[in-house]
Image (tube, rainbow, N blue to C red; front, top):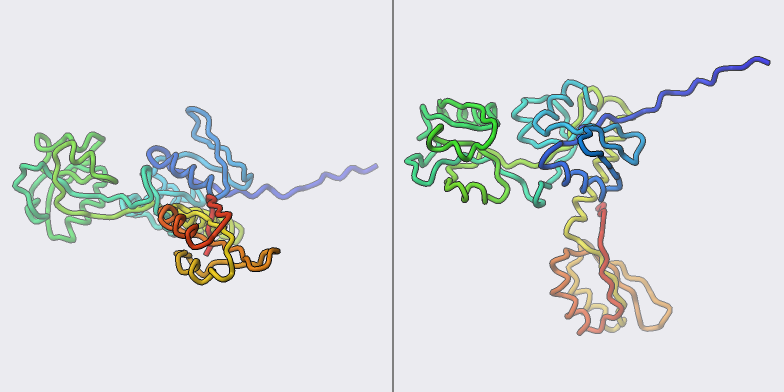
Length: 300
């Protein structure tokens, strides 16, 4: 009996770069809300994902854009700042506003000691500046017509003024580190958020592009759900108009009839910080059986 070898197509996988470091946990948390669960062993750089079509690796955010541009990865997550710093030629698929502490953008600012005579960018002419984003800083100064000595900082940048440098360019989310080191902001260079980026050649592959776009949709839906909750309540028909006027819905609330005559069910989505204000008002207006529930995804 002739035995034929069964040939199977190689399994398709998307090569994904996940930022290691300050954004790592926030990124995994966002992916979890989007429906992708990652697990990573201690000291490992290769997280496993419950989606078999994703092959991921942890890479410093500073390097993600370069490796995506070179095709080492099909896509990855990194900040707009590191795309500019690496002058990377990539596809920016999605702007994702999240950070290690909040859902706000981070800022690259130029700062000096509180006692410094430097008041404007023009005052930096001929001065020395320390930063991790040398290209970004040089491009900014060139646009301002200022020539200064910009040196790479390996860390502890806030501590280098005034003894080692005249000014620094550093990233901040809350500004607490700047205040602790008695630094004053002169100007902001860039407001930056994480981006889902893709290699240009990979983006032309139909399977890869569809996979990336599917991930982007789910990540965006998780961002949209942040800070929102669902609300269900039963309402007497004769009180429906007044109760709807209380609800700050994304769109018109969903209304369905109940088996009990004279009552309807109302369902809507609203910001979580609005709930505590309107719940007592809803109850006073005749609503009953009010249920608040969390959301993982919202797709407009």
